[in-house]
Image 1 (cartoon, helix red, strand yellow):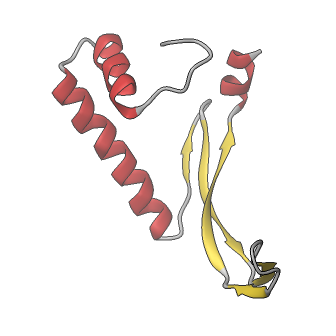
Image 2: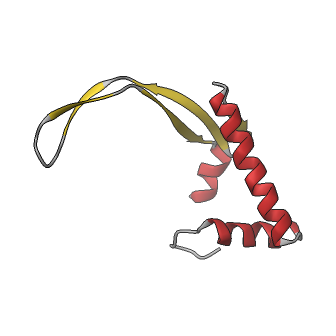
Image 3: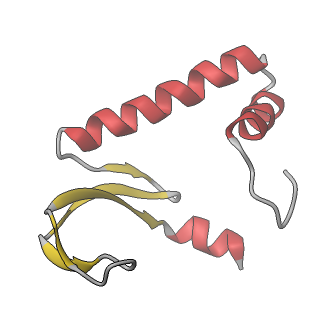
Length: 96
């Protein structure tokens, strides 16, 4: 993978195909299936833990007051659920 650059989905699929010695079409289907599975699991309120890589979870963000930067008018930002990722030890260690 290119170092110091952002990698897009197409480049990630290329890397998966090379590393797993599979076609780009198969790599694309596998990546899409993984993304869909994680999203579906999070939508149900569950977490996804990939040992050594990290944990995907959903946290609740409370309603809060924000400010429109143009008008400086206060606006209410509704409560929402947001995805979070906590990297695992092996991933952190691989970066250092």
